[in-house]
Length: 433
Image (cartoon, rainbow, N blue to C red):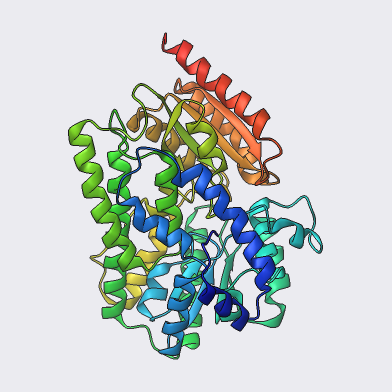
């Protein structure tokens, strides 16, 4: 996470027992990347100022907000995956946010204990905690993990040894027995949060939470609908920043600010104003998420002459696609409706996962995509192996694709830039450009 520290921040971090000097160095590294890859770019919507503030305040103002809510009696829950049913957390009055790490600066601290050949997302997350650079660790009342990959679930075993950890078991298929298992997991999660907060889950509050999350999903869907314009009103890099903010900001405030941004983007579309120069090849990024601190691939694609118009990932459409049925009545029906919605997420942990290929091909058409960049984080075996089926499905649909396997470091920037530029050039030839 990036941050522009103030003297008060130093006092805040010291009070939390963080290594203030090391913390400052890691944040300075991330902030420099954000300035270079995001904020310094021309053509940004004015409404992005709010989302820049969310990013910069992630280790300052947002921490103070969490502490204030805790002081008022709320519990703080840290999450690591889009499968965590946020409606339940909201209905029971918790404050929650995603704690996934997107910086290379913290990885060496994780590699002192954990294997080096793990995915950078897990290592970055662990490194922030192990180096004393995560201000949320000392505040957590509960962390919630899930079993979407082997690296994560074995990590949860280690982190959960001292308690304060809940693991959601994701089934590997989507048959009736798997759906029944997932519903039981959602019910058990609701009971765990009830125990944590000391409050019973109430139908009225859960219905309000469902409506809030659906409103948030509709706002995100509208932003993506606007990206289908011939000249997208927002760059792919800025759209990624909005998605990253969605995972850490207060849901109601975030939604209100995004609805305002969408009005600005809509006006841009009506005026024919694009965030990037006209005529760029349109790219879909598919696969692994780019969590806060990681703008590497989007920056490379958009500084190589193309425009990212949609993300098929957990920091893209996978987070907001599908609404919870608001017509469900009573707690049991509502919890079942919530379980149903989250079961539609097409993570690569499922086998077979033809649903994901079908969705990707459909989106390639809807967003007028010229080519797909499959984004694979090192050691992410599920997305890496599934890239074979994805490439075949896209090829059958006439959509060129390339697979980029990388991590959070900058050591391969030059090589990746050459490959991406060559791919975009091939798209130009394909269109007779």
